[in-house]
Length: 401
Image (cartoon, rainbow, N blue to C red; front, side, top):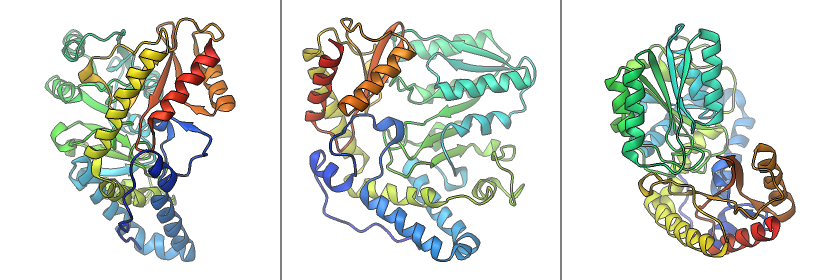
């Protein structure tokens, strides 16, 4: 069933690869890749081909082919993220990481769950839900922008873990929704030293930054393949440290109960395995277009040019205060200038501005409130070009003046 992707003509990043490999509405200025991602045409074609093969004989696929194809994909993706295949499986999305991992820890009343003010809302809600169910307590590190330094973040974690010995687990974003690349290697080591379990939300990591999960050694790590790694939506990696695999269970307990970590996660009733199979092909696609290093070189170069232009042309704009060594490479956040007065600096105002930009101006960016300001988060990927940035600035100027 699975065949390697054919090597096509390598397209230049920017307009050529957008027109050749992506299926965007030609009128849409797409600067929001980090939300739902995008599937290139070669992988979309492969997705349809595999789906058609399955529909030609569903029983053949589910009874005799699915496990082998799934294991092949796990092996390819494991190589991509620096993991042993035996420590990796697939789940539908990185958000599931919180529920799966927390339910494995048997939290008791007064045990502590550590989050931060930068924790993704979905994981924050998961922590609150488990605290309600178990009687555990939530502890939160409040980070205020501008951030001081990488070492300051580490020190803040060390201080709260020293002062609060009942904390049993820390939920840590690898890349926060605000574009902060947290120092997770140091934080995982610190947690392990303090006998605190680490749940790493790497939703934005695969395909944006190089990963070596075996070197990091988190207790639990999940990252979406359907964001930056071009995979169809509904596919995330889930890494579990060998010490934790015997006590972790998937959300759906099915036929393979107590038959081993990978088999339990493989079979969770009848579901669509195609996104997982395509994840293996997605790593091949990344290699064919030049690899992550080439992607990073293009994206970061365009990002830097974009930042210089925004700060020059958009009077009153400023970047969110993130030290250079903590900046996510493909995500950038800047403040909507003070002279905007149409939109309240809260969730209501952010949603309204986002909708106006999206519906009326075909500009796809993320808008969110933080510290009594409205902020714009834009992304850069291989199909973007400088013209997209010029259009974004022009639209925001006209809409907010």
